[in-house]
Image 1 (cartoon, one colour):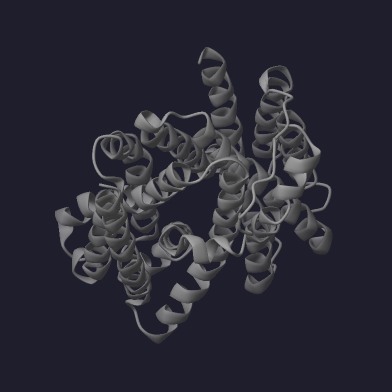
Image 2 (cartoon, rainbow, N blue to C red):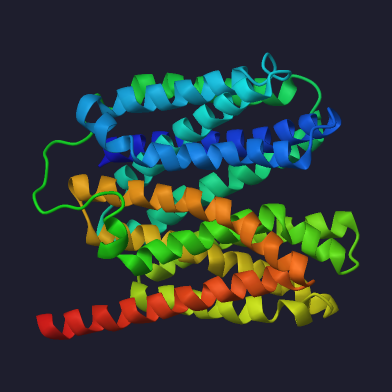
Length: 387
């Protein structure tokens, strides 16, 4: 058990460092390109490269697990992230090569996130699974939030942000080399499994949860400040609104994880969806409601983040072994897809009217609620049949 706790600590450290890297290098690259008077299209394409890389990594994890040890996979993935960050300054004047480096960052990041989620579920007992997964997700979100703050503190122009990220990756690499077991990543193949794409048919409601949150997360980071500014709020207040939403996500995952270990997870999954739907649909009123807005944004971040935490927890509850790895690889692919669709979908709707962001969030939340309700009904039928 103590060995599992040590490995869990390394997994959490690795995903935290990856979160810091993503949260810090995304604004660094975007701001440097903006200062170089690059087009919005070029900036957007480079910003999308990590998400594309994560989608690619979903198809790589199975092969990596069959060929390398857990330690070897993590060393390879974190090393790729470090090389990608180190390449940002030398490749600043070579956009095509910089795009390749950002793609590599996404691949390394995706491998760490996908396999980390699978292995955290694997070493967690079911009665504490919700809390452990919530701790893992909270660590990633909290360090992702530190990224922009680090850029604001150290500045985007100098080498210090990238140096800090590289130093953090170096610490993670050292601890992985010392602590991560060299055992095989997957011990045996399991008959009757499913492919990365086939997981969508096996567990559509869980896939919808991952898709919704990745869509939500990318909208909050990219389009929500634009939406708020368009309604007359200052740029500083608009940015603060996004920070409050992310703070709600980071602060409430552990309490929601604790709650999921003590009540029926499917019902909590549906309940989070209903709250997101209500809050998303109410945003046009809330944005002008004064003091009601801030607690509503905090709650919105909490329940949206809860959808993702519960989706990963339910995946761990339902699958194991190679199927668990494949399920998390599918979740990584869907995450990348949602990260791409979020800014595109909400931006397209905003071009048609000022309430594009709440319309996009509400529409996808409604689809999610329908899927979660179906999942809840199916789980209850299975429980009744077992009794």
